[in-house]
Amino acid sequence: MDDTTEPLGATALMARVPVDVDAAVRALPNRSAWLRRVITEAAKKELMGGRE
Image (cartoon, rainbow, N blue to C red; front, top):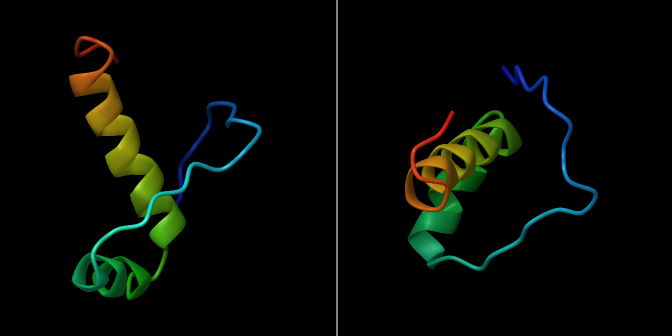
C-alpha cells in the first residue's frame, strides 16, 4: 500500500537497471510505492545526511 502523504516531484525519476533487477521490481504488486520508499530511504541516508 502506498502511504505517501508528502508532495511529490513534478516529474518522474527514471533509471535503467540490470535485466534481473528490472524483472524483480516489475513483479511487485505495487512497484511505484516500493520504488518510492527505497529511493527515499537511500536518498535520506546517503545524500541528505540521514535526516528524516
